[in-house]
Image (tube, rainbow over all chains, first blue to last red; front, side):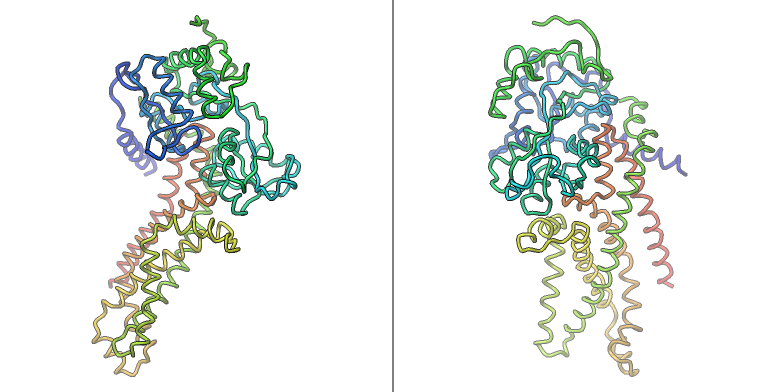
Length: 283
Length: 231
């Protein structure tokens, strides 16, 4: 019985995915298909006129140009389905900001990092004098987007600082709960939270937590395309395009020596599965 | 995608076992919210339906008959608003009025409201399907109005109501996953968290399996009830 159920579900999933039969997942005459979870300001969102915009969208377009592809096709995939979309070849890679972690590197091959990030804890502006350091968070409730790197950080540091974790579906939902006074604080990727609180006087970005996190572009495991994509990414670092896009969306230039300007040795992330110590020429 | 990749990403035994405790916890939350919402909503819907058919009787004077209107409004509004919006209003908007309902109870309140609205309509349809002659016969036997309801109308009305009530119950239990927008860590939310941490979608399949484990018995029980009540 159990086996019958498993087989039935496998058939159901297989038909859902409509397994692509063609061999070429990266057709050079087609636009570059990149997955973004739209609605994550300023990385990927729809403008008032309905156009895709944001850091990830600009990055996808620049990569497409560098790879000689006729533009980028932004595929909007909810975060909870974004890895499944990659594995099912619905997209060629994920351009939505994805933190590089060891657990994820076991399933996907990352390109080298293209951005350093950290976590930012935002609080209700009226608590500005009460919550100044991580130690002030004892007994406080912190909201976070489920499954994000902020969530990982909270779980790893919960015992040390004695706060409580509240899970939400999206970072802005957690921030809204802070705004209405439901919870004490919200945490999320630094750039996204900083952008979110900018025009909201009830919120205050109080504590930046350096976590050493970096974003990389996830590709399918053992897909040779990863190296092509990384080469294109390195070109964008060297010709200054990435720094331009960075400044356009985050309002400040990428720091010299940060992942946005640094070209790393080999392909992939040093020390993690999927790393290849291959010498390659820089342009 | 080759078959071994399909198994690795969607039917990964190791990931399944590693994430099972987390998912089981989410399942427990889902079951609690669903059980409370369905049972309270069931009783509340039944009370509303009996009040509504009672006040609506043509023999009543018109002020009594007007009492039907607030119930009709309650039922129609709650049936037409998506539960997601009700949830968001209760959790994020009520605090502006100084009402801070905990998330768990915000979810229960939402689904009780939705369940009771649908249950009211289903019970009312069940009650109104009973021929008026039976009501008159019951009354002429000397039964009081409530006795007549209890012994003549409701047992037959239930029989009509069971199938649509079961489907509504299942629909509402699935809707419990909407409560993740207000931070309730239900089964689906735990599954999504696990798949994001591990970049492996297997937990979503596990969640589907766990949902099936909950719903299969429900469907079976309702089939059994239908058959028994039909005798």
